[in-house]
Image 1 (tube, rainbow, N blue to C red):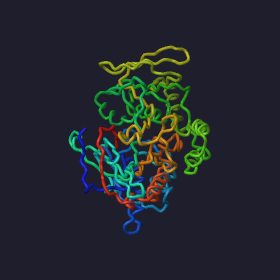
Image 2 (spheres, helix red, strand yellow):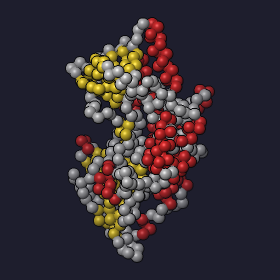
Image 3 (cartoon, rainbow, N blue to C red):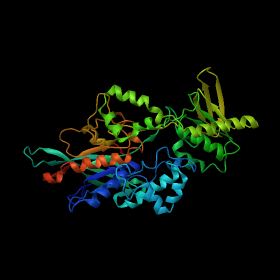
Image 4 (tube, helix red, strand yellow):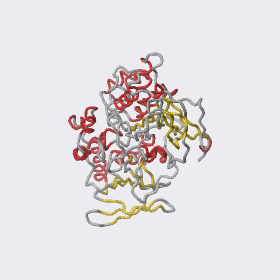
Length: 464
């Protein structure tokens, strides 16, 4: 790895964000609103790095009729600042659709519309973000503490990103605080590799666009959650002559629990209760309320799929087939498509499905954010189970010599902060809490840095 050179002229940002999805977008907005009211000299300097060439959020699943599963009031700002000019309602007003949306009488806008709202908000803070930059290393930067001990401390971090043709150009940034929001990664069962005919649902629309001239006669969809059901309905609609086989280990699709009391698990106050709870209680809460989010489907969509199946049975043209209490035991790509062998968990009977495409709607994983921090990782503390030790303000606990801050959001904190950690529900409030944590701490600038000594070492990759 080439070394990115630093000079005394390299600016030091109060905050550098890695990744620019909804989590760090909400933080960028919070910074903008904070600076608008800050006294002279108190404004916070912040910059965000995103590897994508432009803002994008689950573009592969922006199905035309798919709706959000959270209220529009849980947008980027409202629960933190109801008067914000960055709210979804202000977006609707700017688009001339506010009255139309009110007449629509829904709390759940189209997913495509909410994505457009995100893009609208991102464009208004684009002075804080640099796209097309992949963060590849984070290194501690030591400086002499001018306090009583005069010890060397980690005053800030050197963040190295790559950009340009072939990602060969390196750029370095300095950060007093690092906010890591690299999002979730598509999860595939062990041994499954994505290819031209084996997809994860996150790439659905991108892949489907290339099938128009070669329409498969059969699709296989693996999974029992909302995405799996949406993919099944989408393919069934899009390819009117094709058979769609849905494979899952459950007896049927399970409805999501969006009742008012259950939804309180996503409230900001619920984060406090979860964080303070003993470990055994945390595990119980995750188990009790997993059906608010994991491997569950909106009841309306379940009913729609059942109606389709029943209608086809009546008409004698069964294109929608459900292989319940089943699992795929072998998926082999062939010269003409994919051969999927499906096994019944009840009887052991196996069915071979010759398909054009197999789509895995098997969720996402957050990964280990500390392992992605490269040389900085060993400075971050872990608990007995190897998970990041994270304070209530989402700041990672670090070695005593580290004065700079590392924050996690959008993943990697479910064990400490609960189900809402990687979801949109608490996005606005979490951004405000992280911002307040940063602004409430004494800036290293007040301590006086007398000497900068970057340490260079080959580090792991941190993807923006």
